[in-house]
Length: 340
Image 1 (cartoon, rainbow, N blue to C red):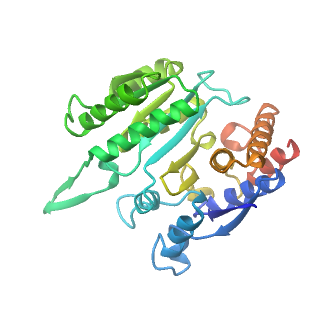
Image 2: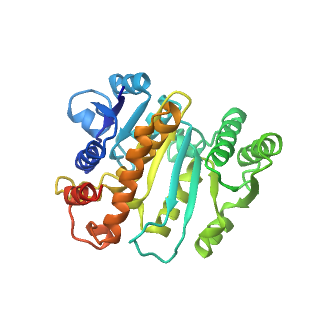
């Protein structure tokens, strides 16, 4: 049987990069069928009355797998983040962003190979804000023992499954002694009781950023609370060429959503210039997840074929403008297909 994937094209450049990725998946023999749903501005424009229609959420709950293009988040006003809403409504508590050097993409660093694991539902990033009196806004940072334990356990288990050697927890518990301190406490328990075979360290996040840009090779898995994880993962993307070459996924106990982590780039929307590689790499993560969780070897084969093909395209100089090339969205997709 093929696997049903909920396709969320998003808005801005989302629909075009999504179409390009589906084209590659189909040509690579991915055993997927797609059911398309709307989210974000696209849902509003279609008259759904909500940026996250219930039919979209229900489809993901039913099929448990989704591939999502970028969605616009207005700055300082307008509707709240669709990404945050998805994570909270579907309890997608673990965000995973692999960051590694790619062949043919020249950067200041070589051999970068790390993974940022981020708690995805709590902290300041959850967006709990109130105006307590005129001109005074309070943002609430929430940390619960259950969520701290859950993400720590997930990170160490992931390290074991992927044969990773070390987990580095970035924190600011010297200042936020209770909230960040709770994550430290739970991570120490999980490490000591269940995963003492994995090396473990704790770093204050400002010093950790300095060490990252000095020598990213010293890191393997980086574990963070929500807001820190968003910032750290973007910094790490800069080590390997930017957000256009970094995939992402959000995992819960009942569903997983794979997504490009870059924005919707409305300035180039519809021009077929956007690089689809980040979403394609996220689709490879989706294939490997299905291969592991549903024991479907076809997905593993398709993932290997696509990864080899886009690697060869990059080495051959078949790249989009953000990587110094001249190809458009679908031209790059065709370059990958030609090398499958």
